[in-house]
Picture 1 (tube, rainbow, N blue to C red):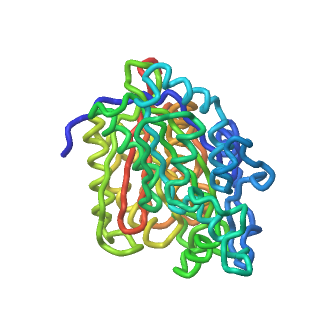
Picture 2: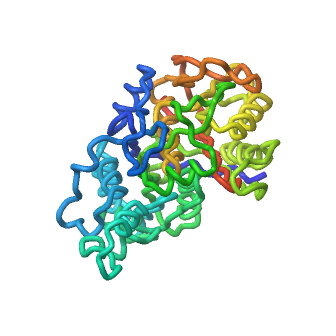
Picture 3: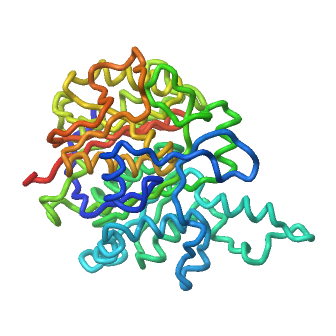
Length: 400
């Protein structure tokens, strides 16, 4: 087991999803049990599914001085960054630490591949990308990280993590290591993934996409609803803001069991969970709320439900929020970390939306409807393809 870590202050955070831009839209949507899912109106070819689409991105170009980064993914990153005062907080951090002492660690699974798809759909007669899409940086996996670093004027380490659905949960772990080892003093972490044909039809080819709004942990669930989202957090040493909520622990593991299916006994997921609690110096009995990965795929929900049922006291509350936003892939970790932090801030447990017939594997921990109660310790689970697992532990600030 790992040794307990020194907690890090989360001095700012934000999220934008199909529920709307910023934390107020997230809180209002969760409280109203309002889903952001809609029938697919994105793909060029017909695909009978529901999606979590962020409105307005088509009419929201980047500022002129950032036009070289123009693409849907970076538009969503720009929209998300400019909510809840996050961009201002991130630009203030170099004044405390120096621009070379602030890292940027971003998670994404598709980056700006949508722009590359567009380029191939509109090739010139000579087979070249059209002139307006001949921007090399946009067609790279690190497009998102490069964009964030450029618009925030940061000069520290810049990392892109792509471990499927756990990408923007693992950014917290990478940032903690950079700070603990003295490489930097702060880190902007986050994740952005936007809808694109490769993802929609790729998941459909795996027979994982539902023709109805996703129903996590429902016995009749039929697959996932894909969404898009962006979110960010600023991590700094605890003494900078002792009353801020804290990243108290994290756990990571790799199942190496199957290309897309989790280990049938959840061994990797359990290892990530145990390591997160150990680093946080917490016992499972101290956890108040768990934001579950809960994608509404058959095996994922079955394995995660069994893990929660055997690991936590009956009073611990747990739910998936993908019925609100869809599965936002590489952005799922940061969005659901934000939801865990909102649970701490607001004393609010979001219900497991869309499930009406609970899977028998679920234990008494499941919150099927919204609940209000104090939350001091919240976990967030992110379990990706290939068994790329991450679990984050957040704790309320000192005066909470």
